[in-house]
Amino acid sequence: MKQEEKLLRLLKEYSSLGIADQIDYQKFYLYSLITHSTAIEGSTVTEIENQLLFDEGISAKGRTIQEQMMNLDLKAAYEQSMRLAHLHTDFSVEMLKSLSAIVMKNTGSTYNTAQGSFDASKGDLRLVGVTAGMGGRSYMNYQKVPGKLAEFCEQLNQSRHRLMDAKDTMAKYLLSFDAHYQLVTIHPWVDGNGRMSRLVMNHLQYEFGLVPVKIVKEDKAEYIQALVDSRDQDSIEPFRAFMIEEHIRNISKEIEEYKHSQDEDPLKDTANDTVNDTVKVGNLSKAEEAVLAAVGLYPTYTYEKLAAYCNLSRPTVARAIKTLQNRQLIRRVGSDKTGYWEVVKGKEDNP
Image 1 (cartoon, rainbow, N blue to C red):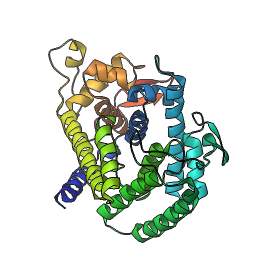
Image 2 (tube, rainbow, N blue to C red; image 1 turned 180 degrees about the horizontal axis):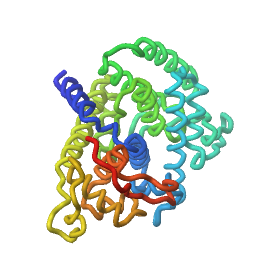
Image 3 (cartoon, rainbow, N blue to C red; image 1 turned 120 degrees about the horizontal axis):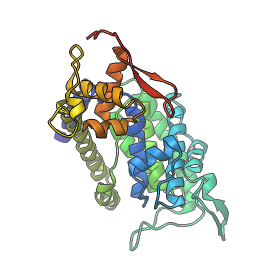
């Protein structure tokens, strides 16, 4: 109970700080979810590489095509999942199969077995047995999968409808954790079960308006152990406890980084002498002053280049840009990719 209360307090602080209201925050949070989910499955593509891949179509050097396609496919699956969540579409076997088909579109294979052929890239349910790692117990018989998956969807829909208008945040999180665990336990597909289980968990969190839970790659061993412990103990509690603790860690880190970014002082006696010479505009923060000066000098700079020049984090630059635009001190000329920033002359600061 103490950890649940701690998580709720952190989520309240997270909301009050307006962290999720930053420009492009939702997009980059999604990119982070995708990067860590595929990393758990062996992808080495970084968040920055995925940003370039998703936004610019620039392939990551030294990464395999399969790794990059895994990330592109998962992005497409999340986008479809979020559309369905927005529409409050009920879960069904066919819906899950269609999402799995997107997840496995470019990395799934066709399997020929004594029971028949099935295609992972089409979202087909498995027709073979699957073991839970070397020396681990096997997952349920494939013949039981269709019925168990249909039962899973029916029970999940009942719980979703019951909680849709409820104010019990923790009950909603617990439902999403349980859905993750139940789906990975059924193990409907020959591949992609982990990605699908995390996607379904996040789908529910998006639908309920919660901050989605990110399982970071650094905690992979602890995550897998929690799944094993819950299975061995025939109890969901070990997995729930891990998920709550994981969310606490990640939300705490987000809050700490946000607060740190608000205290950053780019106007130091460093190589950024031009930034130090900027004239204050009204009651802009030091970060906003620095970004305004940098934009005037380098109007074609991206957020990343502005961040490097001003010695700020990218989220801080994004917030500064939004403030400067709102105050009509700068404006964007042209497209996001090929345009440039223009400092608007003669505008007064309107705090």
